[in-house]
Image 1 (cartoon, rainbow over the protein chains, first blue to last red):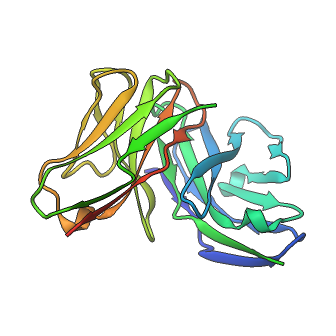
Image 2 (cartoon, one colour; image 1 turned 120 degrees about the vertical axis):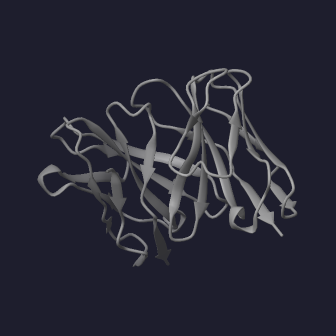
Length: 115
Length: 112
């Protein structure tokens, strides 16, 4: 069975610091894709960053980067130099290599960035 | 820019009534999805579609039907709404292949 687990319900950090959000996943597939999404206070859900299971290099987009530890089935999201506008709910998600693009989501982590 | 539009934004329904949530995408994506979001559960897949005329059951399809009459439109139908279906519903579209999904703004449904 496929499963995505986010154990951090909420995190609070000071502005301009670095935060890491944890995510572990379960899959029997040899090929899969991992995503992080951000849900803003307005409810909008936007794609942030993606990691393909066969790639050893950690993905980086702007001030978002991933810590992909395949042996631990872990895909952490790192946000450097956090800004107030980074305050949101962050979802980790997994897509199987042959699932018809179905995403399985974790329950989300609420990030609060304080000035 | 990818565009997925949901209507209505908010809906109040009565128990036992019929509810239809609509989704339109202008991305020309083959795949469309309906998720519901509840506290403590994240987003859970209800139904999805690979193209016009096709619908597939997701992880929690009970009590819901879906309809994909065209490439652009995908509806979620609650024939007999129940209070347990009170939730926020998101529609998404995506291409074939392991690409990201694009989400609509959500529909908040309250069943009294």
